[in-house]
Length: 279
Image (tube, rainbow, N blue to C red; front, side, top):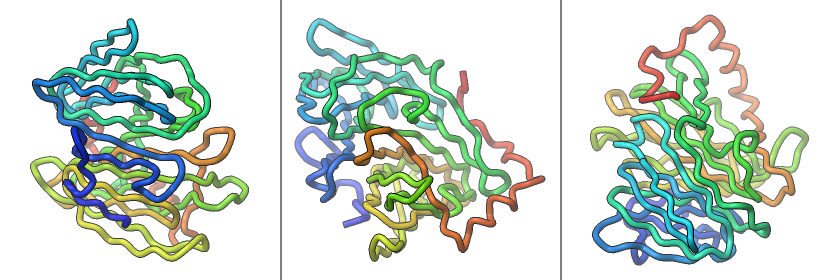
């Protein structure tokens, strides 16, 4: 299953629980929890994880360490601080808010870290109706992990992102092999659309209407565009991991649509960007 509507991947305290076994692949995962009066405790096991507030704040505790994550009002309020938790760690979360835990099956236990929002690089991509914002909080050249990579993409209503369509599923020069999770939030209870289609790696055909809490899994194939319906700003969290020893998000554009990038020359960035704070 490529499209996972909100509620279909719920399990225990998790409103979303995508493990490698649930997704039918090897590395990438994602959990989302809506924290309430009771703390949520879990073991990371074979997965390295991030604790990323989508809305609200939380306290992360493990061993003798206790970190308060300031969080944010919503995903449209700019980057948030976050925490990195290594494999084989018992963790407790307390607080009030929606918290995402991107994850990847890993073999090395790196040092746990708390990263302030001010250290998250914010990038503007595209132009015109392809303008979008990328919060590169766990990109390969920004934050060290064993396997895990993750970024946030924010697209103003009416714009297209993850465009031109691209893939990273074949060990070609300049292309990484990755499993990818898209987790969506949409402003004002709105909607967006996500396309995934076949490549030489295999057959896949998805055009999903997405709303807050929905997930799209990309085991292979071209993915994009991600379309924000007019009037509704679109957010998605990308979680990626793969077999390579060196982390890379390298991709290959669909050659039929690669020319789109040159069409941005001379176009201005959408003035609605950036969302929220950028420092």
